[in-house]
Image (cartoon, rainbow over all chains, first blue to last red; front, side):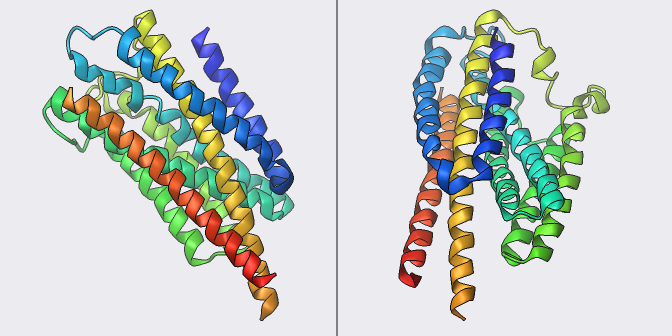
Length: 248
Length: 37
């Protein structure tokens, strides 16, 4: 049931974001309800982490970091795929609204990727005795982060021009090519990695699976709300830029 | 336990920090727009 709810959340969040991005000023009001719903999920998730999920036999209490580290992965991938999707829609239509969606997806994706990269070492140090290892999974995740930080720099340096939008759309589409390398890094590393196995194949006890599932759903909706708010900001900034250019 | 608290605290700081950035940037964009209209 939980995997179905996660899939449904991803599909519903994607559909809502595409609908919203098509006309941000008229539809941004709906973000309030998504924001409230995702905020309501936070205490549920934290209560499950604190009282429902059992303490893992080997790692003990520090394994509770799992319930915040793993949920950050879906919004990271979701953000970068959304950025590529926005880029494709922009290249097809040349409409600024899709470029705004692409920028929002990349930026919020970077926020969650940063979160994952910060929380991971806090878990790795007590669990494996070291903050970081240059194995394939960690290195590829860091490269993915750099790819999209560079994307954001590229956007900020060339804000507002059609050429910049075209370049960043192509860059964003190419960037998602790194995601399979991150996901399958553990298979490619053939055991030479700090992470033992992809969590999806771990076969968790039901309580742990349900708790991490609720965490994923919570993060998906927080992500969707943040993308919506970033789209609103992008639209406002584009208007301000247009009025500034019009004044000259 | 301190590691767990640190991980959740970092999560809170990153997400709340980003929300505050969005609010501040939105306010600045709205003020900019009002000044020019």
